[in-house]
Length: 112
Image 1: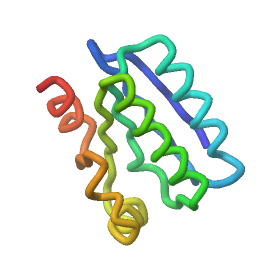
Image 2: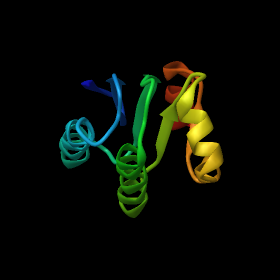
Image 3: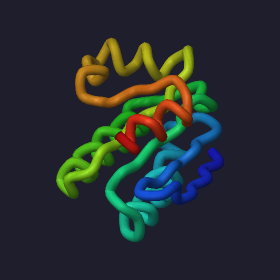
Image 4: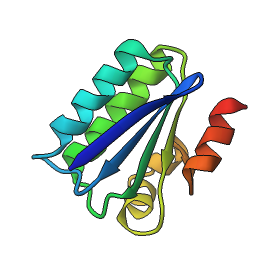
């Protein structure tokens, strides 16, 4: 998995590419930890290039949402088609996450 991050005004953007599973979740968690330690607690995570996510990866997303909310921030997931939106739906997590279809939409949501 490759993870890139950058600041965009009052929020941070992370882009993940590759499977999000037991072996790669620590990489994403480390990048999230670094961002949340230095940036505003507003975060967009682009998962459009993540074809697979297991329970460990999902756990990273849930724990990140909890941390962001504890810091009175917001988190938006950017998802395309495929596994991630389906996974959020079948686990009923779609009711808890803010989800958009593009980074531009996430920027607009976080700027509002």
